[in-house]
Length: 383
Ligand code: BGC
Image 1: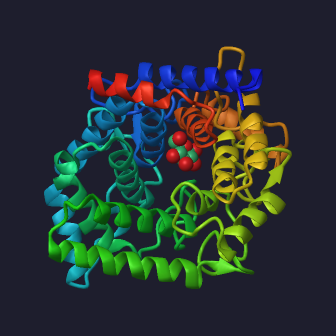
Image 2: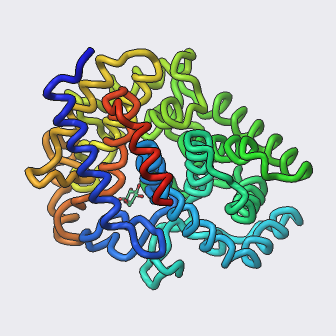
Image 3: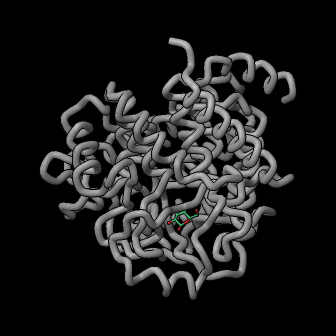
């Protein structure tokens, strides 16, 4: 079928998004979460960055994704002693306290920064491995340049995957979250697929991935769908990623389908997706990146029409200059809670690079980008 006018509008927005991300990637390779939002300025997250790198890689911007992986590798390698201490303490049965675990975000030059943050989150150490795996599978890049950092990440996750920690939304540190477990499984599987692990590490990674997967599918499930955390009956929209993009729970399986349905029923209004029902951050609005995550899950389940509606909704949040926000206030769960956040941090983050990346990724998934191979060749030539 020839592309419609709307398809052109979407591919143009995706193209503009890739250009924006490129223009904001730092010389060190880091992706800023948002260049202007007060609380995020100067920091790059492993979680956001991994999804941004995957979006860029899928768009043919191989060099950009690789520069981000190089940045992650430098951040990890600079902490190899610290990581070794964490792993040894865990093995000795005396795990270090949460404050001594690795942070979730770093300054562009690889420091931990001076600002307080809700730091101990494990998911990013899985998502960056997953993004490397996707990239290597897509572009045939040689993973050996990231081998040491992959090994360090695997050791970290193998030693600590079962610890409660802050979730994707940097909240509820007392729980084991479904999406965090999903990211860990995806990361360990990807690391194994790279073929760079020695036998001992590979068997430890296999065992940890299987144990984390068993926990996810056995304990982080309620009423047939993945649950926000072990023991919760709620769903969280981040779980759409575990079903769709990360492909830890197949979109066509019973749990996959029930998770998609639960996110649709409980958290979606029109095409806009809330993070979770009790969300009060900026009034608990709708996140375009989550519409895209849900769209990707639908696409993988074969519901391309619904995936397209969700993509259209996400695109509708772009401002006239094409910039996309973290969330919009078309439907708020807690309208009285907006002002406190505006007073604290200013208006909602915009642009948010992760939102742009997810739009790109869903555009690619839906095949709206027929010239992807050409772009890939260009990017490879530049790399
Ligand atoms: C979100 C995180 C995100 C960070 C940077 C926070 O508000 O909860 O998921 O990593 O912003 O974008």
